[in-house]
Image 1 (tube, rainbow, N blue to C red):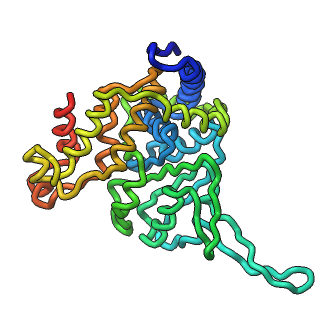
Image 2: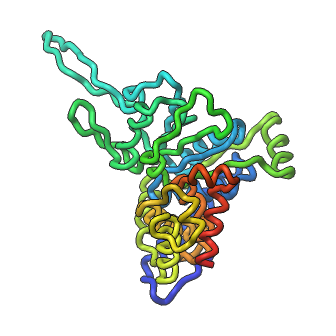
Image 3: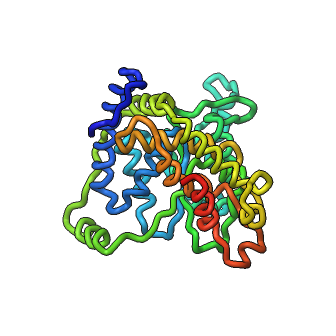
Length: 334
């Protein structure tokens, strides 16, 4: 993949970006051997990981969300584990616990047994089926990259990412994710139904004697180097202003847009701007560019903002949607 370069970017960054772009191209191709027709979902998931963040995959059952997470783990060279969230899941089932052991000489001591959160890529399947107490067990891990058990700190492996799934149609027996936890997710990625041609490919590829397998494209160390590279890519002044305008106009107490002030109950905090700054750089690198553009901000506005905003009851009663509200915001920076 040929990169679009600039005279103002140091040569070492150009060289590193050239190599990273080639590896990312291979990774996307390898994922495409197993996951069919979800190119935008794959790009967003990879952008979240390149940004060092987490993502919430929202879609009905059977759309290959679990397969996607497992495949990304294999292709990116990450150790991955899966937790099936259920109403009876306890925090210790996620982070681990201490057990009392007796040694050969009768001396007793506590030993920490790590939970499944001690991995590089964690799939939290149907995360909204667990109680708020259990959901909160992920909060510290997602933000701080360590957990505290009995007053002792236990660092998580590097890198550490959470890709959680959620079913949007069956809400019986579920617990809505609190705003504090939603804000920890860099993206909310909506996973839709495949097109006719894609569904035909799925039927032919998955019902035969053989099925596709994903090949490893990089190591965890190489991924971490790419994450460092993303933070070094330059962001132009116009892109920075677009991000600031988008985020600040989305807040009802700061917005100059009448419909935002009237319809939005609460808007995004500074973490939304940080997410856009990193994600636009990651998207540029995935596309073979060395700096993001306004188009990157427009494309990523919805997955970054939709879980960080809420409409008022009156607006929802009138048929307003978050997607329509974000479209209004995007018109301000076109």
